[in-house]
Length: 533
Ligand code: AMP
Ligand code: MG
Image 1 (cartoon, rainbow, N blue to C red):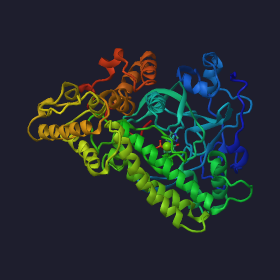
Image 2: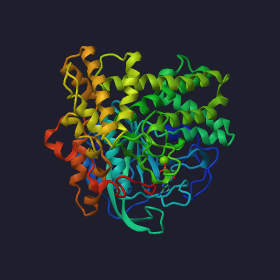
Image 3: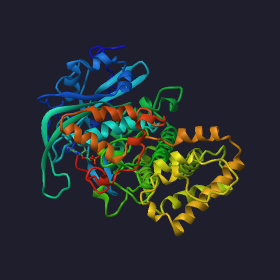
Image 4: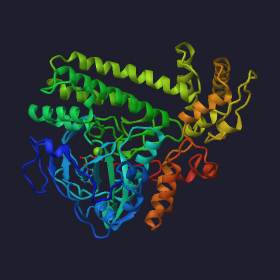
């Protein structure tokens, strides 16, 4: 175990890659550099709202270290430890399908890379003040978006979804001005800082920026650094320049990891909301929790992001396709480092196969089948989503409770109570809707009887794939409302609840394993979110 002061910093990124020579914290275009050194802006009264014991443990920090005043000072941005080397990364990106040029860490500052007993972890403050990449914005973050990032990163981790993590949520004691709905109505809101933790925060856009600027040298350095530090298993036995095959093998792995991440999103009903290429992690981690949301009523067309309301580019059902498009942009950026573009094209094609294979395997578990039989199961899977779309049906409750469907040869003539719990508008359960549900349930019933798993085996498999507790959109909002009144109990209660999303936790069932309350249907922050954060 360590103390804060004995954390060991290795800082490979800033040690090995080219830095911006200009050390001023002024907004500018940064060329021929992967990052700019910049320190967090001190704040008046940092106070810790919550910290994650698992992330602290990953950093070898015992709980006492997180209760020290120094912890608030460090992770609010007021102090640095010896060995930290703070910087903001330079990257570009495609935003909503268009090349946006240089973006960069406008309000994220990497404090340093810690060498832990199990590997390297980078600590990054989000909302700790302006950097050379802040463009016209302030470099700060408001409490509501920080709570959402903090809780969701941890919830996703416990759901088994690859994600960046969050160590701490700190109030800064300062106010930040935001026009939440871009309607000319700015308000002062409490400011906060989240300390995010990941082996690397490199995004597709970090590579794209150098390709777009015709800077092959820096691009090459970043690619080689990334493979050496984050994909060492791909390295050849001997040192020397990396051959083209290693670069293409690396891209192939990025495709596979991205496919696996999206399969998880589709499994738990997570909608990222802003899948721009600057928000795609090279490690296949979910990154940048902004206007994300969770499906309540299942709807392939849903996005919580009001900024994307028109085109709905980032809607739930489009996530697999958008990830593919983003990978294509990454391939375009790195193709100059390969001798032959074919392997990259093959990896892109293989992404689609890999996603499909992963998706149906995942659905086999969600439905509790011992084996996927392409002949009938593909239709069974595709059709369940059509059925859920006929009337507003809670995705989480439906799949979780489907495990309770009895194994019997008797036809299902009515919707079992456990499943009608998932309906938002029970009056709509007549006519075609009713027919569609019962028809599907009877096909499914015959399939599980035929499959031969015992009821217990089946429900164990299903309960490990179908979470009971997810961070429903309104749950985070309730925690935010409370915090704005000065109480942190709900944030910490949710953090606890979401540490065990697959457990029954009967004491929490009534409150949290329930359909979204009607008041939350149209409330800002619950169903509609803008990029303002
Ligand atoms: P996002 O859509 O949140 O991924 O952000 C896109 C870009 O805008 C990134 O380069 C961010 O660093 C930057 N950005 C977002 N909010 C702010 C802010 N409040 N201050 C400075 N930069 C920001
Ligand atoms: Mg971002």
